[in-house]
Length: 252
Image 1: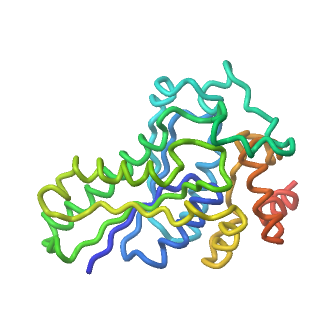
Image 2: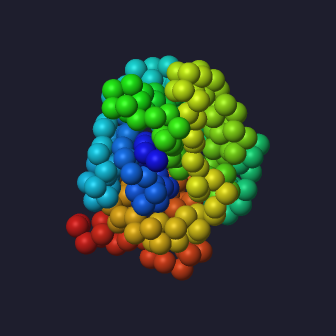
C-alpha cells in the first residue's frame, strides 16, 4: 500500500502537532504552506523551520490575491479592522458559537482545502498514471489541524463542515470518480481541548518551540489575541511551560 499525504502547515501549534502525527503514519508526506495575504508572515517562517526539523518536503505557495477577495477580516485588512483584544477578558471566549470574531477570514479553510486537495490529487495521479501504482494499492490523505472545542468559533473549524466538504472534494476529483481512490481528510485534533493538543504535540515530538500562533507579527506574542489566549490556556491546563515562549525570551 502506497500512502501519500499532504499536511497544511501554518507554523502554529495545531498544524505542527498534526504534521508530527502524520510523519509517523504516512510514507510520502508533503507540507504545504499558503501565503494568502495575511498581515504578517511569521507563521510562514515558523512553518519552514518545522518542516525542516521534521524532514518533510515543504512547499510555500503565494496566493496573495486571496486577500483582495477575503478582505472582510482583521487578518487581511488591518487598515479597516483592529485585531480584538477583548478575548483576554474572562468569559468572552464562551460566546464564540454565536459570535464569530472579526479575525474570521471568509471561506479561508475552503480555499486552503481546495488547494491542498489539488496538490494531493496531483501526486496521486502521478503515482497511478506515470509510476504505475495500482489504484487499489493507493491511499491519499489531506491532514488538517482544525479544532472545535477550544477555538475562536469559526464555522469552518466544525466537524460537520469537514464531512460535507470531503464529499464535495471527492465528487469533483478525477482520482475518486475515475479511479475510486478517496481523497481522505484527517482532522485528528478536531474534538480535542487545547490541553490535549499540547500533550499530543509532546507525545509525537512536535517541535513546539519553533511554532508561532499570535495574530500579531511583533517580536514576541501579544498575549491578548484569541490565538494567544487559547494557546496559553492549553499549556496552563496541561501543566506544561510553553517552550516557544521560553525560547523567545532567551533570544532577546
